[in-house]
Image (cartoon, rainbow, N blue to C red; front, side, top):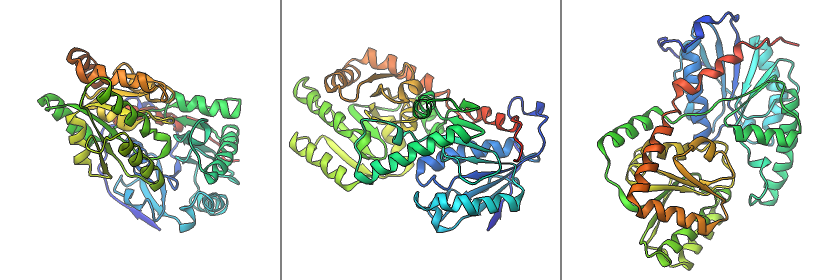
Amino acid sequence: MFTTHNQASGNPAPGIQSFTCIAMKVIINSLSMLNRSGAHVVLGHMTNLAKWTLGKHEYFVLYNEINKKMVRNLGDNVRWVECPSSTISWVTRPVWEMHGLKRLAASLDIDFILAFSGIVALNQIIPQVVFAQNPLGLVTGVPRKPMDRFKMVIQRYAVKQTTRRASMIIYNSKYMQQAYLENAGFPARAEMVVYQAIADRMREAADLAWSSGAKRKKLQILSVSAMVPHKNIEAAVQALHLLRTRHGLPASFVLVGAWSDPHYEQSIRALVSRLKLEGAVEFMGDVTDEVIENKYAESRVFCLMSRCESFGIPAVESQAFGTPVVSSNCCAIPEVCGEGGIFLSPDNIDGITLALQRLLSDDEVWSRYSSTAHKNSQRFRWESVSIPLLQIFRQEFKKA
C-alpha cells in the first residue's frame, strides 16, 4: 500500500543545483531497521534527501508492522510501502527480498535500491547501494549464544557477497569500512563514509543546557545504550567499585536503556549485588527522550566500554551536552568522539577507573574535556552529514 504525504520544499543542499543527473525512482529498503537507532538513521538522512531532491527524484520507503512508527510526512516525493510480516524476521526477509522486492521494483520501474541493512538483496537485476552500519557479526571477542554464532556465519558470507555485488557501499564510519574490507579481503567497487547525526530535538535541548550552564551531579556517571552483552556494562560497574573502594569517591552509575536480554540484566544485577553497589547503580530501563536529555545534562561523565560500535550516537549526544566520554578504543567511538573523550581497552578496568577518577575529581581536566566534547559534537548535524549521500545520484547506474 502507498501513503503519500505533503511537505513544502526547503533550501537545497550546497552544490545540489549543479546536478545534471536524470530523475530517478529509488526504493529505500528499511525493513531491517527494527529498533530506534535504525529508524533514527533512516529518517535523519531521508528527511534531507527528500527535501533537497523534491521535484527531481522519487522514493519508495519499505517498512513493516514492527517499524511502522517511523512512517511520517517526508514530502510529495516520498511514498511509504508496507510489506508483509515475513519481512520482520532475518530468516524470512531475504526470501521476500529475492522475489517480492524484485516484483515491486519492476512494477515501479525503479532505477536503484538503497538498502539500510548493509546487505544486498539476492536475485536483483537493478543496481543496489547499501548503507552499512552493523558490524556485530564481523567482530571477534563478542559474547554470543549458539544461534548468534550461526547468524554471524551467515552475516559474514552475506557481507562478502555484498562487497562483491553492490554498486556502492556507504559506511557510517571508517571503522565500519575497515570491518567490511577485512571480512571480504577486497574493497567494494565504489564506497564512501557518511556519518550520522543526533536528532534535532536533542540538539536543541543540548544547546539550551550548554548555554545555560546546567547544574551537574559531580560524581554521576551515565551510560545510555541498548543493554546487551557486547555493551560490556560489567566493565563500568567494576570500575565504579574501584572508584569507591580504592579512590574513596562515592560515585554513582545510571544505566539508561532497555534490556532485551533478561539473562544479561540478571548477571549485571548480580554483579552489582556482589560488589555491594545496590545504592550506587540505578537501572532506569527504557525512558523518554526528555529524561535522557536531563541525564546527559546533569551527569559528569558518559561511560560505555562496548566491544562493538559502528558509530555511537549516545556518545555524541552526551558530548553535545558537554559531557565527556570514557569509552572503548576498539570500535568507532574514538573516531567519532575525537579529543572529547578518553579511550581504553574494554578489558582495562584499572585504566577505566583512572580515567573516570580524573574526570570526576579534577575540575580543570573535566572542563577541558567538556569544552572539547561539545565542540566535537557540532560536526554531527543532519544538514551537513547527509550531503555526501547526494553522490549516489551521480553514479552511472544502469539497469542490467
